[in-house]
Amino acid sequence: MTSLFDLFAVLLVLIAGFGWLNLMYLHLPSNIGLLLVGVLSSAVLLLLNIAFPNAGLVADVGGTLEKIDFYDVLMHGVLGFLLFAGAMHVDWKRLKRRLGSVAMLATVGVLISTVAVGFGFWGLAQLFGFDITLAWALVFGALISPTDPVAVLSLLKSARVPELLETEMAGESLLNDGVGVVLFTILLAVATGGGHLSIAGATGLFLLEAVGGAVIGLLAGYVAFYAMRSIDEYVVEVFISLALVTATYGLADRLHTSGPIAVVVAGLLIGERGAMYAMSETTQRYLFGFWELIDGILNSMLFLLIGLELIVVGVDLRFGWIALSVIPLIIVARVLAIAIPFGILSFYVRFIKGSIPVLVWGGVRGGISIALALSIPYGDERPIILTATYAVVLFTVIVQGLTMKSVIRLTVPSAKFPR
Image (cartoon, rainbow, N blue to C red; front, side, top):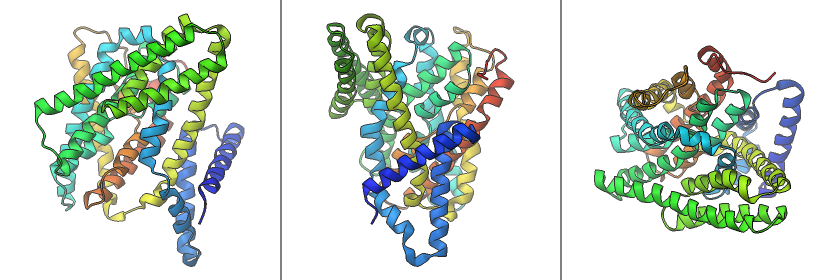
């Protein structure tokens, strides 16, 4: 049996090897490339298992991967660090100017997408002869609707879109995860028979999670801010930022509020006010550099694991057609989730030309959707939801990610690209 240390060593070798190969020859966006490496590695292992069934390669590697609870690793570990690192680099002043549109996309947009995908997925299931209830279809809608902040922020690094549009894309991706997780939790309870859906109850739970998470993040962020302002020692201040992330996420989780929203608020505060009033230039250089490094390492590990998790999930060809049919459904739902809020806000807010197509095509899904799908209890609905989730994630990360520059060039005349 392959040990966890062996698996970790293999992951590091793959990341380092791909990084060198990519810089020298391939020149792909790193996240997309690492996901492809993971998928290709899974495919090679599956083919070798067919050619040499007695070798037990898939069982060996799959057994080791199963020791890693992907949901727990991401939702109660990696995600907090990635969201904090991403939030630190968002310009708070620009975000305040677009807070209305960002909030609408992260709340109303997620709700619209969840309903559209849920009803569409239920209809497709009936069309292809699969028995799935509307409640479970809405669960899929909730887990697939939030965009992935890690993937979206990495896309933004490869193209200089206008500042206001960049702020909307980054802000939405950072905030809609918390909204999506809350909505998923409510709908999963309904689908499994552990709760009933009422508008008042769902709204109250949502407000408790979202507002409670924001308050915890704000209070914890200010405690860290005052601690940093009272000293000038970058090593201690880096440890304060680490403590801030872990304690804030853990406290929010323990109090049944949104950990993702809490760390995003804390990251915005430290990245703006902390850098301006509490850190020397030396501390800023080391602290921001440290979090950029953490972001890069965890980012790479996450996308490689997403590809390798195919070994654990498996490929169920029975659901192949419905998985492919879900992809255009997701795009249509994304159009509705962007166009309706923008239509409402267009009377009050001026939007950049080309905002809607860029936001639609930039709605990349990733690890959060897969983690939520893997958290679904074993049952008849789990395989079809997992297969559809993986199809959407692979399409949005690889196809939409690789063509994002072309979409921006066609729709946003003011966009600039690094040479």
